[in-house]
Length: 301
Image 1: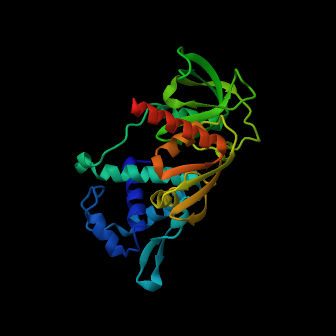
Image 2: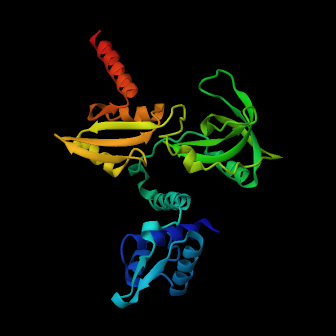
């Protein structure tokens, strides 16, 4: 499939998802679209319906026409546009790519975050998961000075804070599921050796009680007190799927989680500063108290 055709697919999806549009509305936007290589004043009728059908077949996005109210086109399954999280994530990523491609003339006005290396291995890992092939790679952990060679059965991929991770079973620890950061991986290559994917493994359940990728703590109830400002932020972007807002009392808001208080989760709480106060468990309260004491002493020197 040509890149130009994919870009037109996503231009159509993005355009119609922005609101109910008539064919005349679509034609007007197409006339000024950067993918309109032939300078067409209208989106050709036969091409429009062919692309509409192909979009539904490939991306499970249905473009429908409301004929009894002025022939408006709209996305029928906009709230569940992909039928699944993975496809939705890919759809959004490709749509952003298409949008940025259209913005080549204003690249100085769009700022990006640097993304660590490792994404070049994604296709190899995906193929290995599908074909059940063991992988070999060199790994350089933050905890070890020397690199080491690893044979590995990949189970799933996870992205967290712009970094890609692969979870699976190393041959040196056949009964453990471990996680490796792709930006610490070198010389990854597939093998012809086959592994048995464990029937009991479920990627979503594997990470469910955790924030991020660290899994060195047991899940527990965590209660936090927040300012109204942070409460608004948490309602919009929950820290974790277990988040529950319990109550408001004397200008404070209270949220509860069932989550492992790992390094990643603690780091996220720290970013809110004094707008968030940990109430439970006691061990986490003591950790923040000790950190506050040390910070106070450091700045009083």
